[in-house]
Length: 283
Figure 1 (tube, helix red, strand yellow):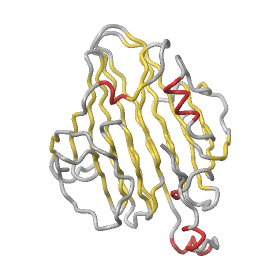
Figure 2 (figure 1 turned 90 degrees about the horizontal axis):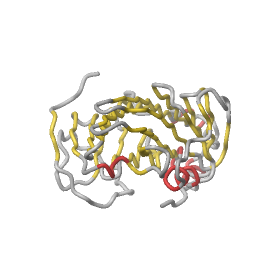
Figure 3 (figure 1 turned 90 degrees about the vertical axis):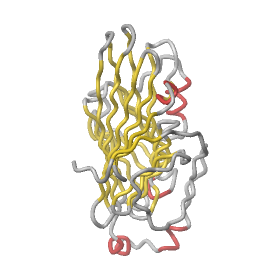
């Protein structure tokens, strides 16, 4: 995939996450100022905001709406404790690849996790793809490493009215139950050892981060075709036994699509109806 622009390495600073953005023209700068605490990727009108200080994607604009509340990476070593954000491994080192791609590295004395993101949107901006990879390297002794990718979509900018379906052991689809043509599909490689769909926020996230030794509830090959409705979140889990110097990489691909304006009219959805629905406040 062609990368636009030059590569720059940025110092990072702590700061607050801006959840409200003005819909103004995107400046196609190659580097983010060192005082900016979050990474912003853009392509053909699609925008992804990443908070490198919490290894979290917290906004994804496609077709004029923000469809993401939280996409985060968590990890656990062994099965005696709960999972933590990979950002707790150490301060992030950020490299940008033009305005479309970013690499974020977190490192402790024992592990290094490298996250890569690449955004590609269609010419009209109504469909966008976010390709991600996570490289885990063991810098210390043998360890049982558990990597979680947690995803909370609020399709069409609204919470509580989404539908999640496990298409197979490595693919989950989320759709908006009101605007049925708004959907997101994610596939993971290699096949996750476990996956889970939750319908009541924030239960799934709390299980991952607050329950010792928690494994997602569906081992690979089970619960294919499961459907849940509500404030949908879902997660993938990869378990690896790692010797000293060992490494493994996982990749996921998220595709988000919204209907053309003409299709919205055909569905009989007026502007007033769309604006009357708001994303439920979450923390």
